[in-house]
Figure 1 (cartoon, helix red, strand yellow):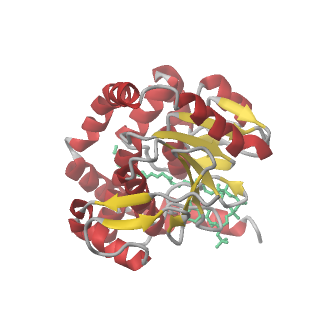
Figure 2 (cartoon, protein in one colour):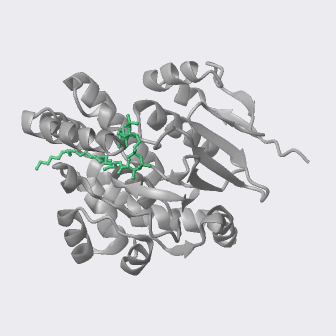
Length: 302
Ligand SMILES: CCCCC/C=C\C/C=C\CC/C=C/CC(=O)SCCNC(=O)CCNC(=O)[C@H](O)C(C)(C)COP(=O)(O)OP(=O)(O)OC[C@H]1O[C@@H](n2cnc3c(N)ncnc32)[C@H](O)[C@@H]1OP(=O)(O)O
């Protein structure tokens, strides 16, 4: 039987200019408030959302080949689709996963932070902040089904989830490897990691830019469970089923109590953080490091 539900999109969401712009570009959302939308299978070009067979659960799949890099478009679509799920009170949990074989997400799209102008850097960073804030503070239960490599921004995205299931394949690795690129993980990336694996382990992991293979990631607490590759999504769904047994209001208030102080750290100085990012990333030395890193990635094949 086809699963359908109705999503009410509040006019408020459609009033934010950047959202309205993106929504109309995606073509699945009518630009009027209170529209009813079928969720039988929705989403957008780079983010597919499908209701799972269990009631109240959706699977959000990123499909931005070749490596699910977090381009401005992907970030925007992610936030819009998350908001859509949150506004539909029939959904309580979401599995986040990838459609790119062997890669969960390559992290921030390096072409967005290399060789562009300050206005672009500012717009992009605002979208990165928005993605983190929305996921980190989401009232939904989020489980990351990490079915591939998960560096930097990909790792950050998975760390915003309430639980992480990773494919037990030694070819994959997860971590905040920013220092290897000659850049610095911002304080809210660091805070998210510290909240997950603790201060000492974070200090070491961040300075060395460690990318942990699955067994080590489990040991350090960066992921919660390892399973064979073909069981990542089904395990994530069964984890969600367990979490669904907890009354939503109690779980949501608890999540908020645990996470709000960290999110407030960014909310209080969002603009300052954007300015810091723009001035840091615009430095010649940083741009050179990023260009060299990108060139190495591109040469790898040749
Ligand atoms: C004291 C002052 C402090 C102030 C601080 C203020 C602000 C902080 C400043 C900056 C913080 C910015 C934070 C950044 C976080 C990030 O996420 S940076 C991105 C890091 N990502 C990576 O390092 C991953 C790089 N990619 C890989 O390792 C591999 O690609 C892979 C994911 C493991 C997949 O490997 P595979 O062999 O399958 O594929 P290829 O490597 O051949 O890649 C295919 C294709 O894709 C391109 N590509 C890969 N990754 C990215 C990327 N992240 N962005 C853009 N493009 C990417 C690659 O170049 C290939 O392209 P092609 O050759 O043209 O086909």
